[in-house]
Length: 433
Image 1 (cartoon, one colour):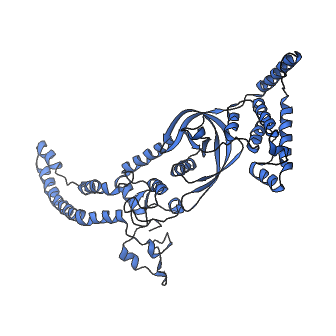
Image 2 (image 1 turned 135 degrees about the horizontal axis):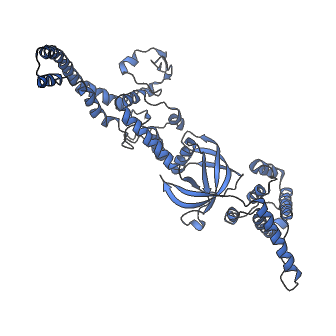
């Protein structure tokens, strides 16, 4: 059943209908109370195989076991009398070891049921078993990954047509879980630990999404539909980190991706019925890829964080630039150097943004504020905000990720602004964002 319970069909048929016209019935489990449609009433293949095994092979063995117990009680009575009447130590040991094999039945169950409890996707012991509408059971992670690529049952190829919420909210099969915990507790615990270790090993490296250029503190909205990124997103959401790296693909359609990128923090994710998702993220900090690898189809890598230089070093860089420009311009034979204070560079960039806003329609200004937010006051955040707004090719903007100085980024932005002002569309008062 979709609630995770399993019942005999005949027992379930005796339950009263909630609606005679639709055939909907109430779950016999008093602690459940869910209503089930006729389409949900399917035979559980795994439980049916276990039941048939018990009926055909374990029942005769159980009867034989009961006979052995009765005989052993008779022998134990006579052996005890012989022990009381003899002083022979060897005979005492022999009589004491003539005990019935109480674990024979349990051993038979463990040996024969183990094969029936394997997942047919990963071929390991089932973990968090989920039963599909067609009656087959799989590990919850295995079924989820299978449906990323195909909406058919991995065994019978039945069209499942189940929404993604079926997997996220569906309870595990209680009967199969009970069998696993009763007969194979050690193996089941070990299997779960291995699965958890594999998950944390997977998240040890930074997952990398190859698509866009995103700057720190800037929002990014994603439509995730590729199977590899659907898997990556689920793992990020299940982990404590809830973030991944975003990088640009290699230029001109070449293989690989850029060396620098931005870590995106996941703010929210809305999953659609077919498994696609709409994800809202925001840039956190920049990183550089040190080692590259792949995991289950998507890119991962070892990264190092990239931060700006401290304020003292920033001021020292500004002082050296202004001194070098003054020395150079003192000699008229040298080509002039135009070095401005950092505050002046920020002012020039602000003026350009205002020109863009004034040249656009009112709806464009509203869209600008709703997408990127208000203009930040922090100089570092301001450079990335301006770069996100101005209409420059992404691969040119990518150079900002490498620069660790606010002043150097501002100088590059002012260069782009100068080039944009020479374009025909800007001279005619047009605005392109």
